[in-house]
Image (cartoon, rainbow, N blue to C red; front, side, top):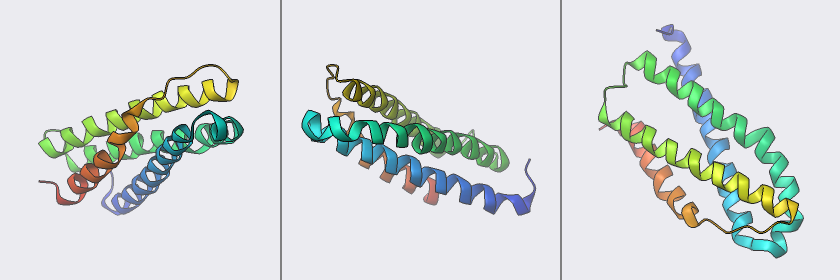
Amino acid sequence: MIPLHAYPWLKALHVACALLFVGGVFANSLLLAAGRAAGARTAPVLGRWDRTVTVPAMLGVWAFGIGLAISGGWFTYGWLQTKLALVVLLSAIHGLQSGQIRRLAEGTDFKPVWAAALVVPSVIAIAVLAVIKP
């Protein structure tokens, strides 16, 4: 159990990491939608951003989120289990995008994954579940 005074800091760090992570996933989606022409020029830059900002933010989302769930004793609640499933989905989409960006930067063939269309509804559902806790 974390001290009560630490909870707001843990929550703030979780939200900050979530914003950076989701922003990175959206940026990856835009780059991959642009395709080969625009993507080949920007893929190395976005790849560095992904490795230095988006990936650590994703790890922070997981670490701080698990800390919050432990402190709240929420692992048995359905809303958290649904939220965790959606975060696993977003993490998987990010992994697919990272691989595509790496292949794009290397100039090798890549097949766009249209799983990015799941990002917006997933983020909305996660926000609703986190705030409402139905």
